[in-house]
Amino acid sequence: GAGVSQSPRYKVAKRGQDVALRCDPISGHVSLFWYQQALGQGPEFLTYFQNEAQLDKSGLPSDRFFAERPEGSVSTLKIQRTQQEDSAVYLCASSLYSRPNTGELFFGEGSRLTVL
Amino acid sequence: KQEVTQIPAALSVPEGENLVLNCSFTDSAIYNLQWFRQDPGKGLTSLLLIQSSQREQTSGRLNASLDKSSGRSTLYIAASQPGDSATYLCAVIPSLKRSGAGSYQLTFGKGTKLSVIP
Image (cartoon, rainbow over all chains, first blue to last red; front, side):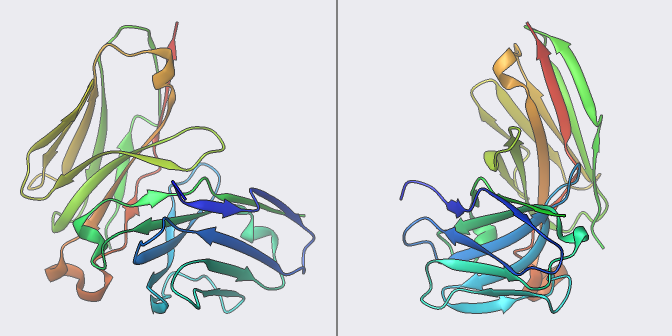
C-alpha cells in the first residue's frame, strides 16, 4: 500500500481482556517498529524488527506484551490481560533501510487503546 | 539516558506570523534529528531530517537547524497558516558509538502544540 496501515484504529477493552493490534508496513520495508504514546507524551520505543527477526524488545513494558512479524511483513502487537495503564496510542513505523538511522521512518495513524 | 525537551509546550500565534519551535537534547552524540508533525488522532508525518553532519534543512516554509555541540535544534515556520496547527515533535537517534545495537531507537520530546489563529 501507499502508507503504513494499522488496525483497529480504536479499541476499547475491559481490564483483563487480551487485545491484538495489527500493522501493515509499506511494501518492501525491511525495518518495523512499535511505539507507545500515552496522552500528552511523546512516543516511546517498544520493539524493533528487521524482516522477521525481532532484534530488540527492550522497550516492552512487561511480559504481557508480545510482538511478532512471522513473514517479515505484517506485524501484530498482542497485549494480554490488559490493564488501565496500557491505555495509549500504539504507533507502528517502517523504514526501507536495515539500518534505519540512515533514513526516515514512516508512521501509521496508530491504534488507540482504551482499557476500562 | 538521552532526554529531549521541547519549549514551549503550547504556542498560539496569529496567521501570517513567523515562529520558532525549540528542541534540546542532553546527549550530543546523535546520528540524526527528525522533526515530525502530528494532527489530532493521527500518526506522525516526517517534516525534516537533519544528519549530525548537517547544520540545517529546508522544505518550503519550514527550516530546521541543528547545533549538535550545544544540544539544540530549532524549527522555523515562515508565514504561518491555520493549516499549520498541529503538535510538532522532535526526535533524535543516538550515534552508533554511543549506543551500539540501540542506534535505531528514536527518543522523542513531548511536543509543542501550535495553534495558528485566522
